[in-house]
Amino acid sequence: MKLLDVVALTKDLPEQSLYKGQVGTIVEIYDPETFEVEFVDLQGKTYAVETLSADQVIQLHYAPLQ
Image (cartoon, rainbow, N blue to C red; front, side, top):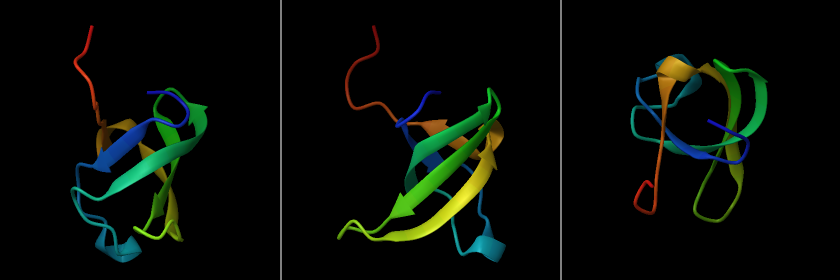
């Protein structure tokens, strides 16, 4: 995964009020397995920024993979 990729949570994180399926954007990469992910609402307001591991997110694709 790379900077600005759109990802979705694969696990519930109730202590952060985040749940499986919520969508965010990678805004920082600390290493190949650790990312800072920003979650925004439909009005563009940030409601969470969390450091997540690669096993907590899945990259979303909006076009066929080549």
